[in-house]
Length: 319
Image 1 (cartoon, rainbow, N blue to C red):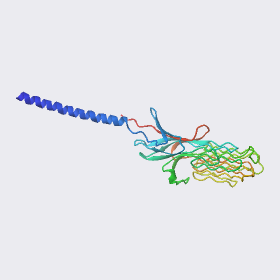
Image 2: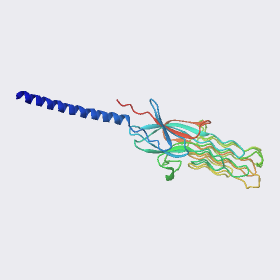
Image 3: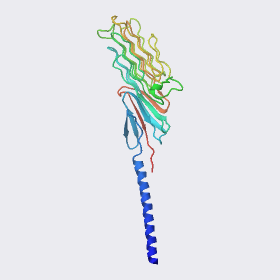
Image 4: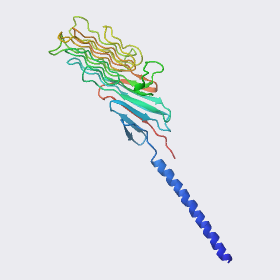
């Protein structure tokens, strides 16, 4: 009898131990599965996710607005933004190149960042995200290139000021449009080249001013190169001035006069000024200015890459 009771007690202990072990194994399996399938950052419908041994990135090349949701354990991200080049005159000068901005910005876990990718125009209308229109004429000016930026609110919310309270955290300026001129439709001469956007080596800060071709000149004047910050972007010859996020519009000419159009200003923190046109060679538009609210920032002119934004971070190691 005593032996039977002892065997029963031992059997119950073994059963309880087996149940406890099974429960622990189930918990470990759940934890491992959760770790293995941890949600990557949301790149939205426009972003492309890529990973390496030490870096996670979302790349945005589609023109328009995308989103990036900051992962829960990330306190900062690196942003590389490239603004779009300006359009060439039709026919006329070449468009300026966009800016390339590399910077690191602080982020809040779970926050949504809105990514805007600009475009290079092929006609007088300016590129997406703020490019100024080229002046319409028999030899039209090229449109300004659109800026690429990262901001805290959707583009539809507006609020661009080029000062405190502006929702943009990073802006890569677009290149200015080329002035119209040259060819059978031109009034006289060859249009001026559009200014390059966002050259960090420029001695003066701010957006590039629009070119101003003087009466009697045989070649259009080039637009100014964009720098960093919220000054510049003006036009001394009466064409459109740049404003927060928007390049100025180039001066056109009445059809039948054989006139040339000025290039549109590139978009940026402050847009570039537009070039003048009319019965003289069209001048190029100025490049838009660039901006960063972060640190470890570099700004340069990008002559090769198309407009894009890349957001990346280094995930924390867990043990």
